[in-house]
Every structure is written in C-alpha cells, then in structure tokens.
Image 1 (cartoon, helix red, strand yellow):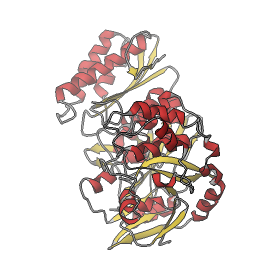
Image 2 (cartoon, rainbow, N blue to C red):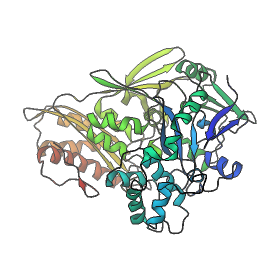
Image 3 (spheres, rainbow, N blue to C red):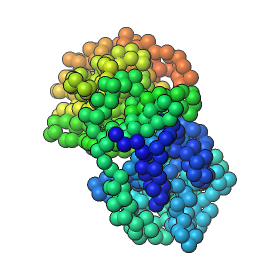
Image 4 (tube, one colour):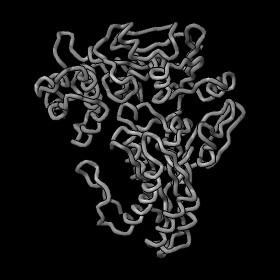
Length: 490
C-alpha cells in the first residue's frame, strides 16, 4: 500500500502523508494553503462559491471538471491536478480570457461569488467548443449570485472565446507536460492514509476494493461525497474508515452489449447523461436536473442507488426501465431486479462486504413509451417532492405492458403494481387511466414533510399518470416547458 496522497496544486506537486479522512478540499485550500479566493457559502454543494477545477487523466489527456471543494475530501485528489482562481493569471500578471471577459462585461458585483463563477466558466471554456446559450446557462446553474448579476456573467461566458481560443491558452500549452506528470502519479497501489486512528483507503482495482470491504464491512464507501460530504459539513459526523472508489480502474466504464447498457457503478452523472439520454431522452433530462454541473461531475449512479434514498433521482427511472443490479463481494457476484434492492427506509439488500458493481439498463423495447417527471419547488438543483417514471407499451390500442415507479411516495423508490394491473390488458383510454389513477391510492400512503403534503403528493402522482396519457395521445399538447425550449416528444 502507498501511504502518501500525491496531486498537483497548479503546477506544484503536493505530497501528504497524514490527513484527516474527511478534511475537505475547501478547508485545506483556505487554512493550509491560504488559497482564500475559494469561498465557503453553503458548505453543501449548492451555491458554487467554493468551485474549483480538477483535472484528471482520461485517454492520455487532461480532462478539466468543475467541482464543489466544500464537500470533496482532499485525499480524493490523489493523481489529479487542482486549479483555483489564483492559478488563472499568467506569471506576468495578465488575466486569463475568462477573467478578462468578466472585467470587460462588468460581471462582478459584491464579488463574493465571483471566484466560483470564474472557475465554472473556466471549466466550460476548457471544453474547447463555444457552447450555445442553453449550455452556458447549465454551466452557471450551480453558481448563485445574490446580486442578480447573471446577464453580464452570461455575456462574459460568450465573450471569453473571442478573447482567446481554448486551445491556445497557457494551460493548453502545458497540457502535454501536465498529462505526463499526472501519468507518473498513477499506480496500481491501494492508497492508505489517515490521522488519529481514522483511515482513508483508495483501492486501484475492484479486487482490492472487495478485499478492503471484506476486512472493513462497516466502512463508509465514498464516490462523489455529494451526500456523505454533508454528513461531515452539516452534521459533524465522524467517519472512522472511508473507502473511496474514484481510483478504481474501469469503474467508470459504460458498455453497450447490443441489448443493454452495462453501467459501472462508479460512472458519474456526467458520464451517463449522454448514453442514457440517447436511449431514454426523458431519463437524460432527469439526470441533467440532478444538482448542477459540479455535482454531476462527481456524483455516481452507483452511489445514488446504494444510498437508498426514497427520493433518489435515478432509481424510479431505472425501475421503470426494468434495470437490474450486479452486486459484488470478495465471495462473488449476484444479480437482482433493481426494485428488489430497496427493502425499507434506510435498508437495502446489500450484505456485509458487498457493493454495487454494475447497473444493467436494457434498451427500450420496440413501441415502448418512456416518460420521467420530476416535481420540485425549483426547477434546477432541487430534491424531488414526487418523481414519476413510466414505461408503457401499447399494442393495437391496448396496454400490453406497463412499468410504473415513483420516488417520494413511500419509504423506498417503489413500483405502482396496482396501477399497473389497472392498465395492462385494457384500452389505452382516459377511462382506463382514471382507473389507474384511483389504483395509486392502493399502492401508496405518502407522508407529509417540508417538501410536500401527503394530499399534494397523492394528487400530483395521479395527475402525472394523466400527463403521460395526454403526451402519448396528443402530440400537440403543451405539457412542459424548459426555460424557453419546448420539449417535444413523439
């Protein structure tokens, strides 16, 4: 095992041998390195004031991604490069095109949030292709400006490409050297560091991961820390043993078998959004509404499932699509339909030493109509009050097959089996749908909480079933808007 975390801070090699397993990147930057341009706002991955850019090696090149420093643990940076707002200026003091564009467009007011905007814009810029307005809005959705200064910031996000091509900035000039340095930090060793008796492990192979989990069955598995990070920053929880999945080779792969996508559990939302959205457009849009870019760049599909939250975003869609899980331990593998994984609130069918390895997402059956609806108080970056996902196949005007799943309606993500029975074998008609809407009352007894009342959830759940019917029978119906871009479904 290796006992030293190694990464680049800008172009400087950092080596840390003793580190608290849950020390955040934000605290390390500000308190240890005095990189105080990175701010703390919410400490939960919502406001973006803490945004930094992490470069990691992918296919021999450095891929830059915006992440929230406030909920990422510093030991997870092993083998990466970290850039803060202080690293963007040139050695001669010249501003990077991103910074200059903000100056030119007067894109800063109180200034507190500005460094986070700069880094989100920089990550967008390093994508190298000038984005359209929707992509700019999406890239900035994870950064909050309470001075309501978005118009000049959006203008700056467009202007920065005119001030210099992404392929010509100094980071591009140093790209080959940076890639070589990062390649030199990669190895097949398990990283083991810690402090005061608390340990952080980062295995490099699935076999090592299985062995570690067998030895530490009570360890906390961490992938993106988009939930676990809040346990530390908000609830002050102390985690004695952390096992991080981000270094495991091949754990982000997505394989097309011809009939299904085999999605490794370590694949991030950013990784899966395109391939999944190509098969299930509504599922892709549902993923786009999970957090913001900073969250989607690190949060994983396996973490969203293994967390077992009743309001997790991906499980209802995966259940409706008929996905299966592959669980792995030191002793072998087993598979199950994903709906069987969720037993009760906070309880999943995962044995000691076992982890989610793969999600198998079948391709849509011919004629299947898939829809996913997420109801929240705000459109972006919010938790579901109700999430409803449907896969319905109509044959000759009759419902041949129906899979319906809801989140937020029970202690777990759950299929609506009574509603399905009310549909299958019946005409695809408003009368049939209303019968299924009534059957939802036998499927669910929702709770009232701060997100929604029980009566609201019951009404919304039923109305979303009617929305499915309207969208699949009346192509001209105005059923949804995303900003000023209408989603049109066949």
